[in-house]
Image: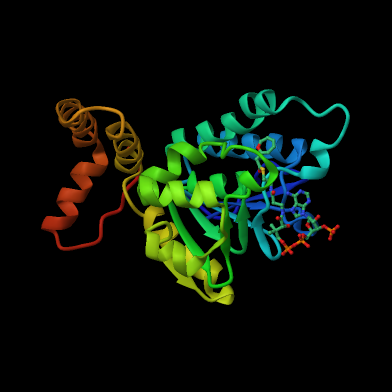
Length: 267
Ligand code: LHQ
């Protein structure tokens, strides 16, 4: 735990670490935080740095200015030396999504404004989302003749169900934060002014929980999608064996019996 500490600095994003919470802010507000090559590198480095920092218990991902993220920077795509799309995905986007989904610490998306294209996929790759009233989601891919990517086709049906995912991905209509709450995609919609605090509240709760148990839960929930019930039961038993051997489990039991809040250390 501890207070503020030096975090690596980046040019296109900000990474701030404060009291066990890392906040990553996409920071190209004039371009609605559209993703450039530099930004994708920065974002991947930030997640990798957080993965190595055991003092970080939970992460907030948000955008500076009025957007969360407008997806791929389309101006950069028009540069003559732009990589082929498949290469761009394999080498730059997919590693970010993998880093997010394999991160031990939970990620709270604070969706402050529009999340479009790969920006929507980034939002979907968070573990929990809170949104500002004016935020919106847009699977903008079809409008420019592309396919949802950066995990969108895998994540969205799991988040909202396959029928809703098909509607959203094929028709490509923008949907509001209120719609997203109705679909179960965001857990809470708050005023723009209240977003940082709402995100902080959820993140602080996560940061006070047992880190190993959270990491194991995050993995179990993902794995359960691709295995049958027998395997899921075995996977739960395996992970429970690990969680049950932690000092944090002993602390949780002691705190319950002593009628006091637990103090989890990650051990
Ligand atoms: C932008 C962008 C942007 C550059 C706003 N790029 N400047 C694709 C290719 C490669 C590999 C992997 O995957 C992908 C996946 C994708 O992400 S494809 C989808 C890419 N994103 C989009 O198609 C969304 C494009 N943006 C929009 O449709 C609108 O900007 C939205 C609906 C997000 C917001 O509309 P408004 O609120 O009306 O804002 P605006 O359009 O006026 O944008 C403000 C500025 O931001 C403007 O710049 P300017 O210099 O004119 O003020 C835009 O050009 C810039 N901007 N999105 N993706």
